[in-house]
Length: 130
Image (cartoon, rainbow, N blue to C red; front, top):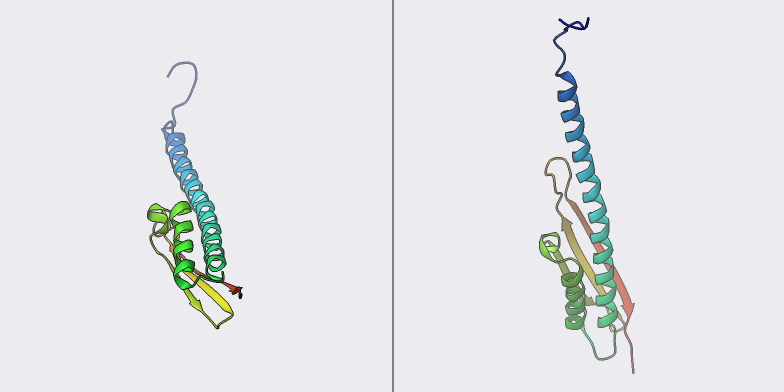
């Protein structure tokens, strides 16, 4: 022993604590980033259902145009693995109303820590008439 310092056998303990705290901080950061991406994806799904019902409510349009436009928006803004479990369905509720429904399941990045988020969004629009 030199310099009057006592050895207690705990010289390496701060390293273990630091590594554990850093790992926990990174997990929290990934969970927060996943939440932000989920919010973005929900906004994209909302935009796609709105665009789809808007396209399907035109005078000469139908359910095909509605679903096509909604899928185009989803493909442009939510491509890849994030948008793989998103389905679009359009229907004429009556002669005057077009309805679009999107069912989405967004998968968490850390299975077991971040749950999957499943939701359904609907939009309706009055159809144009000549």
